[in-house]
Image (cartoon, rainbow, N blue to C red; front, side, top):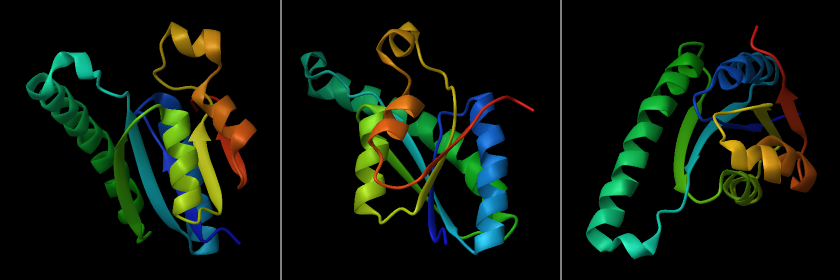
Length: 142
């Protein structure tokens, strides 16, 4: 039923709770999991050298976070991939879900978003509203 599960994360407590559900569903349905970490677009006014440094910092942070989740899934034999992308998180998640033939998105209700997320709408809300595949949003921390 859910062959390809996308698990977007920012490393928050809600992400870990969502990871538990994603793992359970993947084990039940024999799914693979694609872990997605998206970081904000690096502004071009920084200049090429600074842009590369900032992007490398974000990528390193994404690798640190996603490696923890990859280990969490792989220890139960769940086929797992990681994708780290630059761009607004909701748009990146939606784009990846369409291009990677996603059958389910499992994500936390809240992340590490700033006040901007409260004013403009959360990532999970945007994904839920615009996704072409089912979205499972996990609330709570425990």
